[in-house]
Length: 376
Ligand SMILES: *[C@@H]1O[C@H](CO)[C@@H](O)[C@H](O)[C@H]1NC(C)=O
Ligand SMILES: *[C@@H]1O[C@H](CO)[C@@H](O)[C@H](O)[C@H]1NC(C)=O
Ligand SMILES: *[C@@H]1O[C@H](CO)[C@@H](O)[C@H](O)[C@H]1NC(C)=O
Ligand SMILES: *[C@@H]1O[C@H](CO)[C@@H](O)[C@H](O)[C@H]1NC(C)=O
Ligand SMILES: *[C@@H]1O[C@H](CO)[C@@H](O)[C@H](O)[C@H]1NC(C)=O
Ligand SMILES: *[C@@H]1O[C@H](CO)[C@@H](O)[C@H](O)[C@H]1NC(C)=O
Ligand SMILES: *[C@@H]1O[C@H](CO)[C@@H](O)[C@H](O)[C@H]1NC(C)=O
Ligand SMILES: *[C@@H]1O[C@H](CO)[C@@H](O)[C@H](O)[C@H]1NC(C)=O
Image 1 (tube, rainbow, N blue to C red):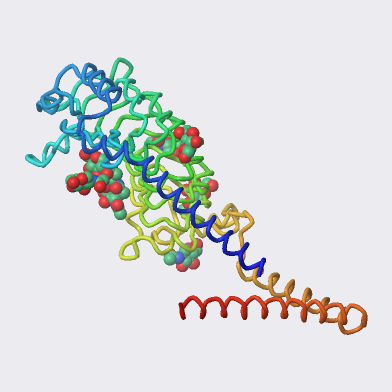
Image 2 (cartoon, rainbow, N blue to C red; image 1 turned 180 degrees about the vertical axis):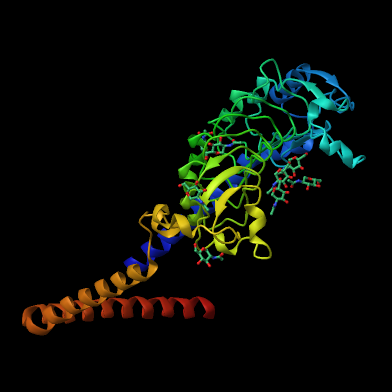
């Protein structure tokens, strides 16, 4: 009797705590909801956007004329979270819709671009996730991609395509999953640090002036879905680690100065199955399938894709075998012990009986109370 009442008491306490935490949770969300409905943006973020506007010297398409008044969430190109009211999106891509030819100019040779700099005031947008400033002319005093972009922790998508930045690809780019720096004038090598961006899904460095080799560690970018390095001056061999990228769906290495045998392997062989050679065209030194060029004369120097990636891989088959083996061995040890040791056997069955009795009593008592309450 005593045991069941304490059980009920415990259940009651658990229910109380659970519902209390629900209430607290709802209350905690309340101010944010009120804020979002009340309109207006967060003052510090509004100030940051106005500082950014100050960095724009010419606004060729009058993109920022709506940037006045209190509610920065209604300004053109600014997106706020419905839930928190924070600025999460800045989308000021120059429209190329009206005249498709616009696309072929870079941002600085077109009067309707934004001219000026990308102000470091954007660092105050602590919740910014999406930033698209593509096809504009925001070179700033240096003409380089601003360093501070690498410390914007919440940024997931950055598109600076068609801004003719010079200098190098920044080695620090934060926690991005989409990086489009295509159609710039970036020089130097692809920094090896970029390969530490394990979260990057789409990387586009096409149409720059990048030289040197493709980093061997590219195989560490396990999340890569698309990789476009076309139209650069990359040389050397294609790293065999590329064949270990299991998520890769699009690859373009065309129009570079790559040489040697094209690595083969699982995912790589499935890409562009209609016409796989287009990923590699425009590299006079490449040979082997899917290209026609024969590299049989160089076999002694060639390291095959699969041998090259000597990393230890997780094999689910071995894992499951080990699991089953462990289970069987463990069960047999207990069983044998019970079989051969009489005192253990007796103790084991006593324990079992006692547990059964206890459960039986609890169930019967509970059932009796339950039927009683129903009867009342
Ligand atoms: C925010 O609300 C607007 C209008 O109610 C809606 O169109 C938009 O999709 C919402 N955005 C998000 C991210 O939920
Ligand atoms: C980046 O912007 C360019 C030009 O505005 C556009 O064509 C391209 O699709 C964008 N890239 C991504 C990854 O969205
Ligand atoms: C990446 O994100 C984590 C949390 O998701 C954060 O702690 C870290 O500082 C971020 N790193 C950079 C370089 O932004
Ligand atoms: C990379 O950017 C170039 C130029 O902006 C574009 O033509 C190409 O389609 C992009 N590649 C991918 C895979 O999106
Ligand atoms: C690869 O890039 C080249 C040059 O930028 C382009 O002509 C070609 O269509 C692209 N191929 C694929 C498969 O994306
Ligand atoms: C192409 O790469 C080779 C080395 O593989 C180098 O000697 C040559 O100068 C490069 N050509 C161009 C045009 O960059
Ligand atoms: C490649 O070259 C070898 C001899 O060097 C020759 O036997 C073979 O037929 C060639 N293959 C192709 C596809 O041209
Ligand atoms: C074979 O190797 C030599 C030098 O090692 C190189 O010049 C030649 O281009 C290679 N041939 C092919 C088809 O890769």
